[in-house]
Length: 153
Image (tube, rainbow, N blue to C red):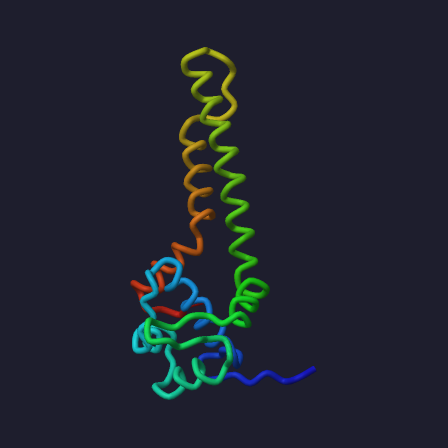
C-alpha cells in the first residue's frame, strides 16, 4: 500500500484538488460561473502558484476567457467520486419530504375529519425541515463555503 503524504493541516495530498473540482462545479451551477482565481485560492487555501499549477496541469480544468470549466475527465471524476454522497442525501431528502407530506395529510384528517392521529403536526414539520435540508445539502454547503471561507469539505 502506498504511503500518503500529509501537509501541516493533515490533508491527504490531492484533497485540495478534489475541493477545487467541487467548488468550480458549484460555482458554475449555483454561482453563475463566478470562478475568480483569487477567490478560489482564498477559499481553498492554495498558495499563489499552487492554484495555477492545479488548474493548468491537472487536466481536470479548461481555462477560457469566460471562466474556468471542468473538462470531460473532470466531470467524470466529479460524477464518479465526489457527487454520489450528495445524490444519496438528495434521495433521502425526497423520501423524508414524501413521508412528511403523508403525515401532514394525516394530521389534516385528524384535525378536520376526526380520524386517529399518529404524529402531531410539529413532528411533521421536523420531518419536512430535515427533508429540505437533505434535499438542498449541496447548495447549503456552497453557501456556507462562500460566506465563511472555512475548510471546504
